[in-house]
Structure formats: structure tokens, C-alpha cells
Length: 159
Image 1 (cartoon, one colour):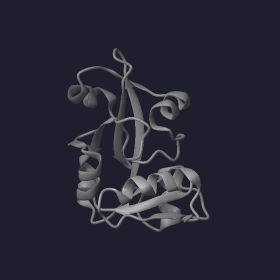
Image 2 (cartoon, helix red, strand yellow):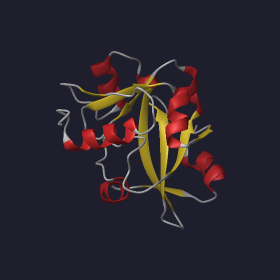
Image 3 (cartoon, one colour):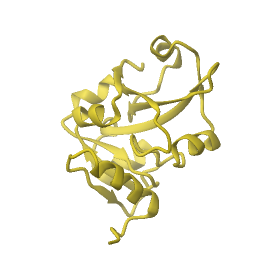
């Protein structure tokens, strides 16, 4: 039975269903590629957007996912203290290879391979947040507590 979702969004919905929470993908007519575009399309604040940013360890070249509040910029030097090595921004090819998704639609779950995940502590102040869901116009609503649970992410100060 087809959900009517694009293939990437359906893949994430399938992953979300396994967690036992009511987490439903919504495909919007407008772009959600950036945090600002997502907030505009949803009608929430930019800070409520949980943006998934992929980095890689400078030495190990291992992927690292940082889920940041939409208004925050990741301070790579601050995050280094949690990771144990310097970080580099991952290019589109690296992101796709490790997550199975393109930049602008990387979800917090459903990746090709497990990825060590860190979550911006600023997201915890909201009752509801919105995360990308595999395409540049698909999102889903959840709580910060559920985000931590489904990603097994470590909450840190990313600023």
C-alpha cells in the first residue's frame, strides 16, 4: 500500500514507525530546504526547526550528525570537546554516502548507516519541534524528548 509520499520521505516514515510514537511525515508545497524556509512553510519559529547537519572527524573521517536549533550555528571548536577531534564540514557526496539523503533533506533517523548524534540543548526548551524528512519539502513534528530517544543523541551545547 503506497503512502503517496516520495520514496525518500516514505523511507523515513517507515523508520519512524518502528519507534512506536505517532510521528507522521508531512509533504509541503513549499520548500523546507533551509531552516527559514521550513519555518515559513510550517508556520513556526526558526528556532523550532531541528536541522540535521553532517560533519566528519578531521582525523577519523567518521560521520557525525549534529541536530541544531534552526537559529544556531555549530561552533566546531566547542563540539570538538565532546567528539575528541576537530570537525570538518561534510560535502554533499559524503552526506549522501553516509546518510542516504541529500543536503537539505537529511532527517534525524533512517540513515544508511548508524551515525553518532549530538543534539543542541536549545531545542529542549520547545514543546514541539520540526525535523526534515528525507526530501526538501517533507517534515515531521515531534518533541525534543522523543528526538533524544529515537536518535540516541547526546544533548550538548553546540554554541
